[in-house]
Length: 247
Ligand SMILES: C[S@@+](CC[C@H](N)C(=O)[O-])C[C@H]1O[C@@H](n2cnc3c(N)ncnc32)[C@H](O)[C@@H]1O
Image (cartoon, rainbow, N blue to C red; front, side, top):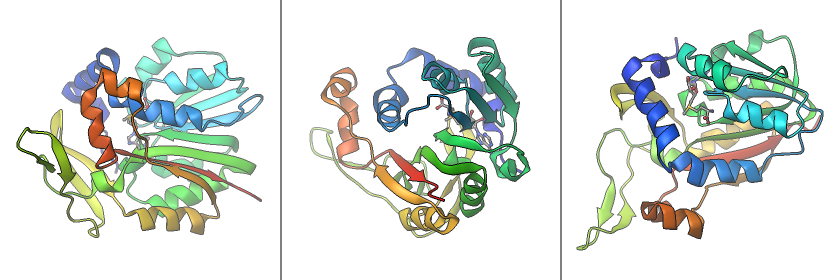
């Protein structure tokens, strides 16, 4: 059973505050890189896996999508999505991404922002998505980078110079795949580590043609707003993949 940490009241309140009130990593780094890779959505059907507050579902309709299904495990996240990002073209459903094989419909575009590192079985997830994509369909997802998910312990892995400036990153446990728990607002938040090779192999074996992989770098404007983002030049936080179903 997948952990549903976003329904923990403390976690939910802290996460909502992070997303609403700060110039955060999503807004400055991940979302600009994801938007740059979006295909033309005119007349397309879309599945958003781990849709959260539904911002992206709304955006897809604005870009011409004719129907969007947003799935998420968290009742609290879906409640916000339904209250703040409801449109006739969008259907929000409570669903574990591990159960995608129970979906009847197929889609032209499958999108997921920062949810796949919560999936225990990535090869199954890839196969399930491939089966639910129409021929010529596309998958675009972001997740925490394997260089971020690998380390086992909550500590500051940055090596700093005499002035406190980060100059290197000490990662560890890269080859030890599987479940990790750590503190993010609350203790024991669960996610899953797999190597870059595991991710590429799972996508390829599911049948996907990988079109591009991006490790987002901050723009000069983003660095002005949040200078600490310069650490992204040492070690990426996010991995983004765009892949196609050719047949
Ligand atoms: C970091 S949030 C990202 C939300 C949204 N995609 C965004 O970018 O704003 C991750 C989301 O994935 C959802 N999630 C985590 N595990 C899941 C699972 N097994 N099945 C479906 N959704 C899941 C969480 O409830 C949460 O809403």
